[in-house]
Image 1 (tube, rainbow, N blue to C red):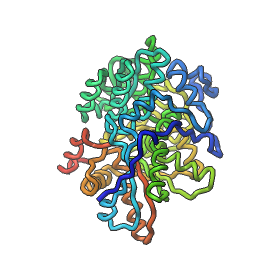
Image 2 (image 1 turned 30 degrees about the vertical axis):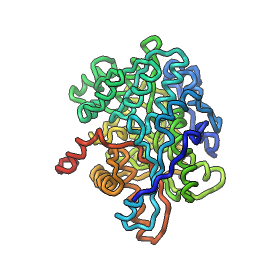
Image 3 (image 1 turned 120 degrees about the horizontal axis):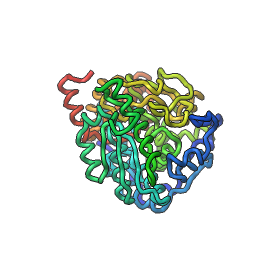
Image 4 (image 1 turned 30 degrees about the horizontal axis):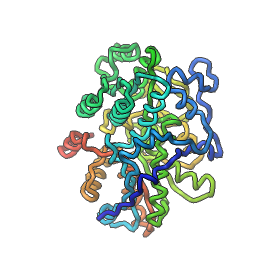
Length: 431
């Protein structure tokens, strides 16, 4: 049995929340890769739409959501908050488990929350072409939908291992008019250099970002769009947690623990930051857990330093926990989490011990995903399965302690396009 807490269209937030305003220790500035000076809006404008550059460096607490963006949000928002009674029963835990179901969007994941906003701001500026990267394909799919909606063309560099593992993601992107290329490719200098070193390179998000930026800055009327890591992307995703706040009030509860899977930080920050505001401003006790892959553990095993966001060193230098921008992660099926670094906001919050992290092996995530599918009826994305696995760990600890803790996690997307991975898991072919 499940119980859903639903809001109406009128409850869709009218502003995004910018946590920078409430952080006691502000994040270190991003640096220009050439001058090593703090970035300005003008430094970013050749890459992103101007309004996104302003949001990237903003310290305003709330930023208005344009009416045109809210209208598109109404296609699928507000998304449900669900009490996972079935999972609780299977675990025999006294913990109360809730999840925010972002899988109900037209593209099956949370990524659309920022894709709509980014496509809108580019359209308003007169940009005609967007260039991006995607890991497992969720971001590329979301931006394909949003670009088509606002009449923009889109080119997507998709990490090669995911391009080969998930052919139907490419088909969906093509359906909305996007051109999709495997990365590394022979269409850019960055891609060709990598292929010269390793002709069978499986790719990484860092590589795909390098290719996308190279193309974006070399073509007129083009801009780059990013699906995670940077502040403006995190800002757009806070609509998840802002809605969840209202829904937890409907449930008569407030979370003790908030969990999200972690690649660059978009869905994790989206669910966590609005609740973390209560801790920053009122001292409300809260545990916030980032669940990352054991094969790409930037928060649990990385170092905090300035590093590039891409492999070729074309992005600004970001102060973040990183495994190094040339790190090549294993070819796990949670392609959206195969990124070498953490966003600057999450990185600073972890330094301040306001965020903690767990790294989880691939097989544990699929075991958790299967249990969730059996008890809650939703096949989760391999990325989201990391959050589920962490939730199960915490629910079992609650059972040992006899504690009725309230756990909230973000179901960032469904796994209907990832069934080949599930087939491999059931056949015992996953590492």
